[in-house]
Length: 200
Image 1: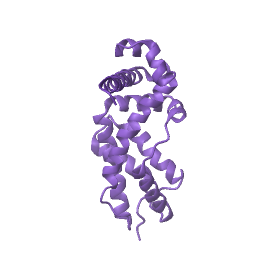
Image 2: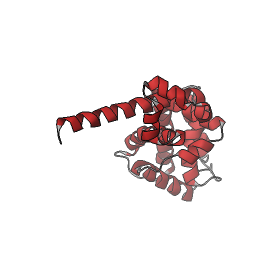
Image 3: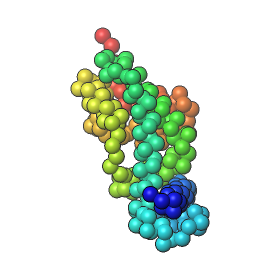
Image 4: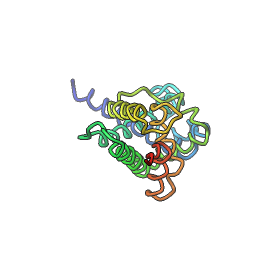
């Protein structure tokens, strides 16, 4: 590979990153429906032709933004799963759910644009999010989903939505109450998912 090829690839990566950064800000500020390709192009300092060449259309750009959000969120889930054994009793399961809620909230606080995009989606019923959400390889999410399924079988999860749906609800519920105190967020979302312990 000669030097000119390396420079071109580096420039292409840099321009793609600029477009994604501008798009993330635009979707965060205006939501999917309100976002405008012209503003993204102007903010990035790159022309519309390049945007369409890289991402195809507005939907493709939104999928790319969500893919980045998903990648960042996957790293958070990996930290939760790392060195954690399968919960073997209710206390361990509740501890795992509390950690998941707490770290999800921290992720959204640390990524305010992602939090605003998800808030727009919650207000719109998650329609664009579900349509554009990319398929991603997320072993940590797969592991947590399996723990939720085990929790459901053992009666630790509340009856209602499937365990897979309840895991998805963590993100939706945390997004809904993120402006409250961390203690409230953790307690409210955990209580919404975990069945109360039966007294004997």
